[in-house]
Image 1: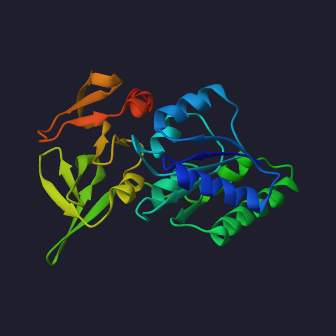
Image 2: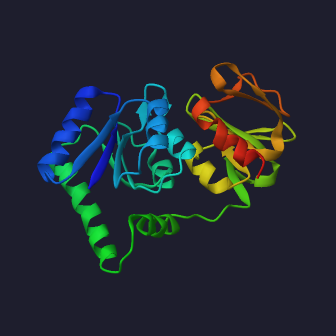
Length: 253
């Protein structure tokens, strides 16, 4: 099995490589990559591996940006010290999600799981891509019509078409409507991204934006994009260079 490791901590990457090869010397580590830009450049010029192990929080952003930029169907094992990104991980070809610090037992269980999946599928001449399609279909959630806001004794249904954007502020997700009303919700930005559907785009760790709320987009420094919305926001809404192409494709869809 050809494997790529995406990890910006060199000792952690070396440890992961050692554990993988201890499990089976027949596996090959094709590359150990450390940043979003480096990884995108690598995948643009090299064949897709059979499996990817990826840290989530890299020095230049979240590794999810990589999988929004490249066209890859390789399954991904996400390795992280945090458990807040589980939903987003499984939307990015995630086949497993393991917490640091991991050990031989953790990696063995993960690789056992992957080998079971591939063996089952290979009996029916099914590829890794089909495995991932099966997993994606199982994890799909129907877009919600309303988001429920709990305010004291009241439950307020907010129609998703009325939501202009969602902003994460001090760990709390706030819905902003086109009428510029603000509602706090207990749901995470990851959960709301799944519930709100294709008309909304997660531009960065703080903002989830309705396509209809965008007034215009400007070029920003370092090949980033600046999004101007129809509401007043105190913070600039920036799309990273790695994510800009995917964002523009979504905007014109």
